[in-house]
Every structure is written in C-alpha cells, then in structure tokens.
Image (cartoon, rainbow, N blue to C red; front, side, top):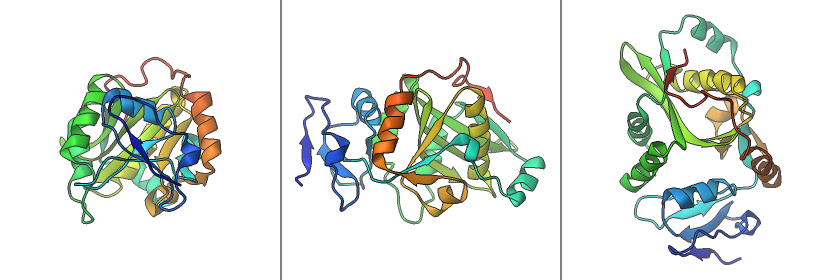
Amino acid sequence: MRLVQLSRESLHFPPPEMALREPNGLLAMGGDLSPARLLSAYQRGIFPWFSPGDPILWWSPDPRAVLLPETFHLSRSMARFHRRSPYRVTMNQAFFDVVEGCATGRQEGTWITFEVKRAWQRLYELGHAHSVEVWQDQQLVGGMYGLALGQIFCGESMFSRRENASKTALWVFCQHFIKHQGRLVDCQVLNPHTASLGAVEIPRVDYLQYVQALAWQPVSPGCWRTQTLF
C-alpha cells in the first residue's frame, strides 16, 4: 500500500485503516504541525512521530495501547512509597519545562525537536495540551504531558529524574481524571513501563470507537485548571 503524502493546504488525512502493517501503523507523511492539523489527527486516532531530519510521519498503529484510569496497577511497593511520598504533584504549572524534561536525558535520543516543542507550546496556549509536574523541594523531578480530547487524555511523553516520579505523575493524574469523568488514557504504543502500570493493547478499530464515543464528551469543570493534585 502506498504511503500518502499530505498537503500543507489541506487538513485531510486518509482513513487509519489504510496504515501500513510494516512498519506498523505508518499512515502518511508531510503536512505540518499546526494546531488545526494536530487536533484533526488526534480526533481521528492519528499521531505524529518522526526522527530529527526526517519528514513528519503520521501513525495509527494496530493494536493501540491504552490505559483505563481505574485499572492503573499500583504495586505494593509503589503504594508504600506513595503513602510516604516526598513529592508534590501539580497540573499546568510548568508545561514547557515538562516538555523539555521529556526531550532531554534520553540515551536513545529524542524525537521532541524544536519544531515539536513549538507545536505543543501552541496547543498548550490554546488550552488543548496539559502537563502534570512532580516536584521535590521546589525542583522538577518528573512529569508528563499530552492532549485533552474530551474524556480521553492522549499521553505524549513522560520523564523521571527521581525514584517513581513518572509513576507518581500518572497515578495521581489517573485518580484526578476519574473524579472528573475521564475515561481513557491513550498510550499509543505499549512499552514495558506503561505495561507495568496497567496499559493494554486493544484493536485499532476498538480505539477508534472510543474516540468516536468519548472525544466530544466533556470532562467535569475544573479538570484542566492550574492546580495542586497531591
């Protein structure tokens, strides 16, 4: 199947079902990272991922990794740690610092280029993107960021500079999301870290049904305001 070349003049995406099997989920290339295009992509179960120097690549893998907030796996050791946690957890207090934290300190390099950072900063300024910060003694030690899509949170990346910091970010966020009628966290592609926290793979068609059902349903007021979560 031929890879679709996107036009900068149109926000049109091909159906996710047209994505390649190998590499799994590769659907299209080109276009741009404008807020309108990014929102259009996520509303169709599509997300960008590409290496520095490569064209923008758009993906919709099958299966899709998701986490139901109420099924977050809190291990006994993590529960003990959380009861005596030295961390404070906030929302939307240091969005750009969280993105920067996700972009740096990775041995395998990063796909979060200047262009990607700028795109997510615009989404944040428009109220679509959000961050969770984990602090210890006024120092940012972990966090995560992503896109709000109705009752779905599309998790984009997370980082940790201290023990259990990224796990704390996701655990506290899931409890907050449940209280505000959040239903699903999109994890895109399963990895050992997210799997250990309860993420599972579901068929792409099931994920697209979740998007159709939940993307236009609002969470309760106050979910995304700047606040202390823990």
